[in-house]
Length: 160
Image (cartoon, rainbow, N blue to C red; front, side, top):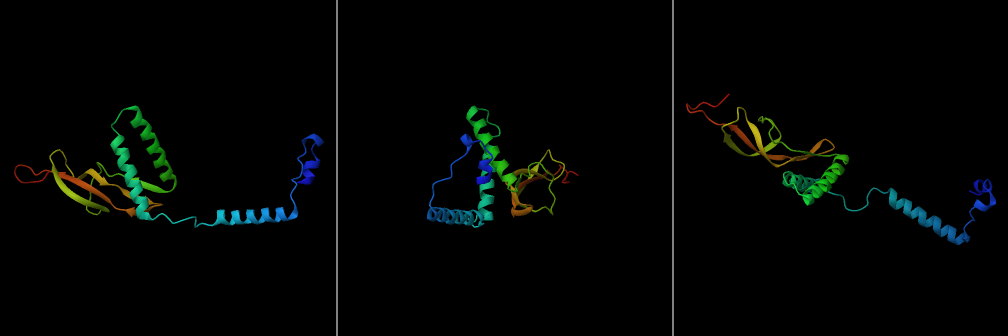
């Protein structure tokens, strides 16, 4: 550092700190300790996948509640929730809503209820009760849904 300082005009040179050798040694030790703390990966109790899924589900529910509300406070809260969702997305957490998708028996969803829906022609998810949550592509929470199925015709046949 001294060499770089000498390249500058005398008025712009920074005086060397007046530290004694023991103070410098103590400062080096403190910096080494700080560096060791910052580089360790275990910076507290780890967040479990179930806690993460619960938090993401609560965020999903809050966003759904505010979706139809049109006042200033709700819009502001919606922006905060969107920022939280963006942070989860950046961390590799995907929250998957299943509303209105066609349902197949092989899907990895927990069906809470099948209900007849006269306006449907195929089985379809009519409501997502709990979303599926994925962490870096691996499912950590299975979604729960209500599935609508075509209502039976008057002659007893189901719609195709």
